[in-house]
Image (cartoon, rainbow, N blue to C red; front, side):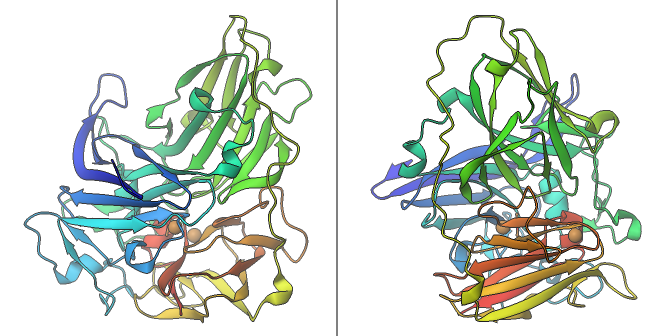
Length: 463
Ligand code: C2O
Ligand code: CU
Ligand code: CU
């Protein structure tokens, strides 16, 4: 719906019976009855308002991942929407994890519905929205609470990139199912609806079937033309190394044109693409490089069994129409990151908590309202992330540039504006961010959702 200068969406969060596996029904927690939820489309510079109504049997929180969003609409983990008839209890803000008690002064609880306002003062990019309830994000997203939110702008539209039916968002997730077809999320005690506190999910919860846009190993009939594929890893914890099999002659079949925060400066050819939870890679695949009739598989080189295959593209044998798209050698102009302007350098250690179960940042388990950093709006900072394990690190509010990996130059997947950066064991990454516009309380956290739920999250305050 459109009213004046605002695009308005209304979404009812409800359980729905979906057919995901042949012959079986899966009861999902959905945005509007589908998984993924409805795709929200915004215009850069034009406000979007999304009214969420919660008809699920438990509280929820909605976060726009990659959104440059005022604090009151960012989906702070205790800013719940309660379902009808539910009154806030002490437990609602808590995670049942040692060290994660204490709903805070930041309590902001809405009954049944909440309207999120997104100014959309940001460039074209592939964003996504998902649940962010403290302690329950893993369970809520696994059960279906995720959707795309695309932002378009003039700069992007002026480029001759594939569009319309050849611009396809692909949400990649892994899931496990019980014999009756229900989603099997083992880290949640279903009866009590509490996270199962356990050391068992060190790597997070991994599924054994890959779903693309909610379907297992789908097949897309393609013409021998260029397609833009907006790849999102919305899995709780799984990383993928995506590749085309077979590769087109000469390789470099995945031509990256964008990252989390929109267009790159120049296209970047990849034979394979490592994508961690939360990350997006915008790629163009030119199926005219294949012989008509070729079945091109998108595979996961890090997977095995049901997680080795992602989807398939069957290139039509029909003679394709002339391709009106191309990939310009120059896509955009990005301001250079300016570490020399930084007013502060901070280091964040992502570690296992010593003694108790769970995960920490700088030795602290998450506690709402206890910020690990206070930053001045309008200033630039260098943040260093250090770990001995594997963590995809995500920052709310502003996108950043990666400026170093292990003290040397950046990796092949670190180009462009990012909001999530993957840290492998014993790595360090340096990012540069300029904090802008909105005062409030924002999140820095691991996007392995089980790590997040087990307290690997921190507030930072902007003022
Ligand atoms: Cu996609 Cu704070 O999360
Ligand atoms: Cu986010
Ligand atoms: Cu982690």
